[in-house]
Length: 300
Image 1 (cartoon, rainbow, N blue to C red):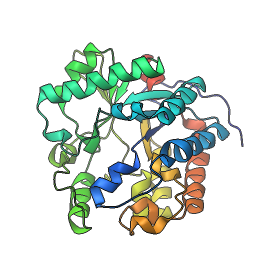
Image 2: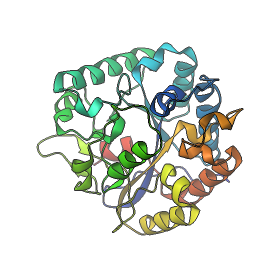
Image 3: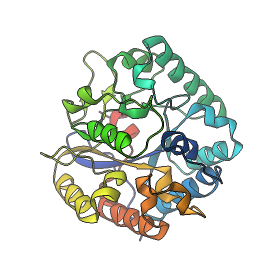
């Protein structure tokens, strides 16, 4: 099942990148009012399982880390292992606050800067990318990212998806009343990568199905079915541009008591075996076209 080594395309070529948000279980517990055991399984089982599957396909990915989670030695060990294997690490804010979008500029800067410092100290790797929680694609972030030497910002989820997610949270017993997105800015956002004027920073959106502008990342496939995912991948694989396929750590979580999720977390409505088969089928499809976003923007 091995694939050839990844090449570095130009931004105008057709390519895919794998991004993985390393959200811990307390994010879901807080948002849905759940009591979840085995919190460390994200770091000791789910993320290592994702890493092993990527290695099986010889795909390099970017793992987006929450700064305060670096207090957990198991997470630091995972990130160091990922870097040693040639993967990259991104900045995913300090606390993954549900109100990140509503923070003022100074608070957002502090979240980015402290996470950058912690990652640099703990993992000793260069950082190039940032993704905000809640897909909060705020242009005010570009100044601090440029100061820190970053090359891209990946928070944009174009189209109506953030509006749909806000509605889902309201209708499915979400107890995190402060959960916020940036729906209007995402609604009209471009679905293609663009360089910030007079800046080295690229805006790298999460990929959406053309015309429908709905995401193809796994959360939406769990909701709409495998045929939906195949349609999106087939369409994007025939298009030029850099396509970001977003996974979350929970996608590879083999939780001992799935009933604790009460059916509220979409990923956990699928069994671990079914989720693993889905991810393997996605990687099979896109492996020959994958590259690291970091490599692409560095050579753009």
